[in-house]
Image 1 (cartoon, protein in one colour):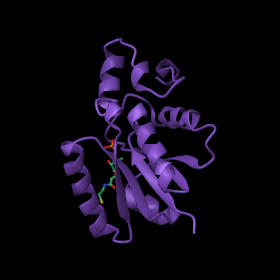
Image 2 (cartoon, rainbow, N blue to C red):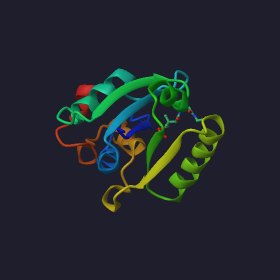
Image 3 (cartoon, helix red, strand yellow):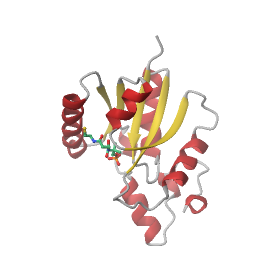
Image 4 (cartoon, protein in one colour):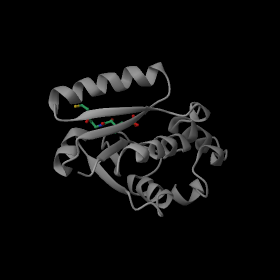
Amino acid sequence: MERIALFPGSFDPFTLGHLAVAERGLDIFDRLVVGIGVNASKQGLLAPERRAELVRRVFADEPRVEVVLYEGLTGDLCREKGIRHILRGLRNSADFEYERDMEMANDLVFPELSTVAIFTPAAFIPVSSRLVREIITMGGDPAVFLPEGINIKEYL
Ligand code: PNS
């Protein structure tokens, strides 16, 4: 049977750290669905459609990756798509605590789901979407934190 995981996140924007986790996920799973969670009450920096375009561009040559936008619960999306695994990356203990809480909530609401957490490779531990947004809003160039060939100005 095909092993599929949902890789959910805000991806505002998708960074080199996310890419490293996705690549490790592709070693474990046959396919990944990158789910861009849209929270109507939380305005991000990149419009959700632009975030999706960026991720599609990154995986343009990887047919095992699909990108979807979703609203509502991550578990509901998994149920709709018949997905039983969630992939998340862990950089540090703060990520661990957050992921543990989320996994516990998901487990109560969607017991059929399991979360597979992968350690972010050490080189990418300082990378975060929040940092990239900060660099952008202060007029800097965040290219060093983004997948190769991504010019963030095309997505703003
Ligand atoms: O990488 P992020 O930005 O921390 O991703 C957050 C995301 C989208 C994965 C998270 O906020 C989420 O799952 N939101 C949907 C709401 C939900 O399912 N919460 C779990 C409670 S059962």
